[in-house]
Image (cartoon, rainbow, N blue to C red; front, side, top):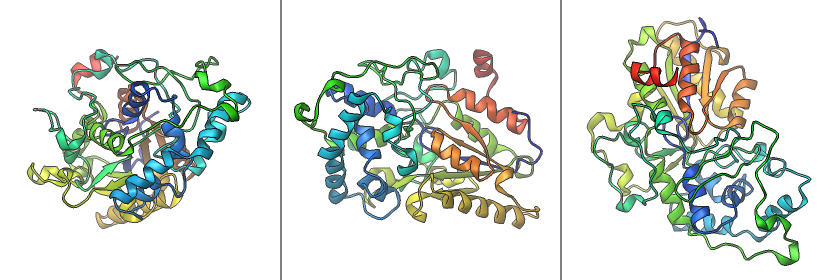
Length: 372
């Protein structure tokens, strides 16, 4: 991608882009509890558009006991359990044909750009200090020296808790770490044993502690990405006249008022909006990606800000959008935005593309040497 003279705004997703994706937590939970691969993702995605998770991200319900009851009910939906096994058994439809991302929104679709192993030390690079964790927030404190999401996203929100896209589904997680198998070739991962089950001989629905799983995902998603987040900080430090407008469009949830994630312990830096000129939260505006209206809202706000600064205005064609979900990128592209796919475990590649698009250096030299 050549530098674009017309590039006036960079629009970031949060979860799976600026912070780590909780996808690994979900897959690890399934492995640890002997739950068929991708069942959790499938159950949540097929509960759209009015599942508990979708309604939470649109700000229609609170994060309380009623939400967790609804979330657990979605994870124990007998009709979806049968559908899930039927899709594997028939082998006439891939999971992507059943979990249509146009029905889901962005938070629980199944990830398209899978990786064949968890990130290596080289992939993590010199800037990485983030570690995977599954501890719930009540017992987890940030490790010394590690930035937290409070530096990045509004303390009452969490960005895109699950980013898993509805394209070819891969299997390839170890018991230590969850990762996705690359689906760019014609080979496919073996189906789980349940693939041969009939509707009359289905295994029992797995017992899933939705509340515990939810908080593990939230805790994991508070860790900054080792490449995209430093690039964001570099952009933020540039004089405004020398950089594009920085915006965020994120599917988010709002924590209860007394939740620890709402604490402001780090002064002004703890407000994520300090990193962005514009921050759009799905739970605050009542819209979720990939609904085109949330992108149009972002462009309108960027356009207004540019004109307030004396600019000529901004259109979708003047923006580049980074996301880890193909369906979200597809909508952005249809509206005219340039797009960059952020791949799990390979996020440094997105930073390189962003450098090419902007003509700016967004990696430190040590990290650049390890990747070039």
